[in-house]
Length: 156
Image (cartoon, rainbow, N blue to C red; front, side):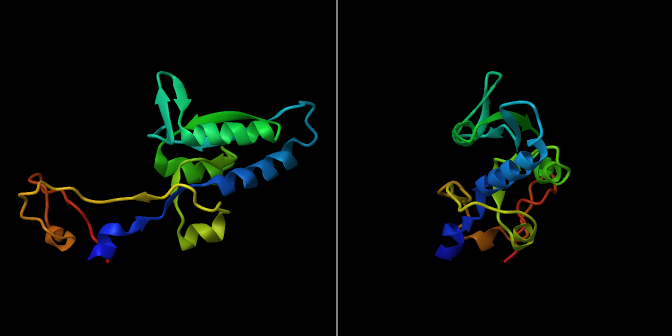
């Protein structure tokens, strides 16, 4: 039971993709007359504290990290925000060079993308009132909101 509550969701920021993006961008811009190349990074811009908007400015840990790495490697950064579901599709379609956002490493994704060593590990839990009748995660099996929408789907 403790294993379920403490299980770490394989949600990480994909810095390895940045370096893959740098490599691909370097190939495509090698003949460019510009002295400073640009890398396009996809993110949601809604993931506090990693990449979120403060006013109209994109800020956060990932934003700072990528901007610093790009600067050190001689690149300008161009940030593109979008829906989470479309970030990897944007990468597949070369709309962005890399993705800097919480992305779970799955066996399927590992076959397609290059990932960095995870540097941001998040744990997820379900919170209920102390006087709730829900005491274990299995107490939620099959439960629904009053609007008949599933409360949670468990795949164990």
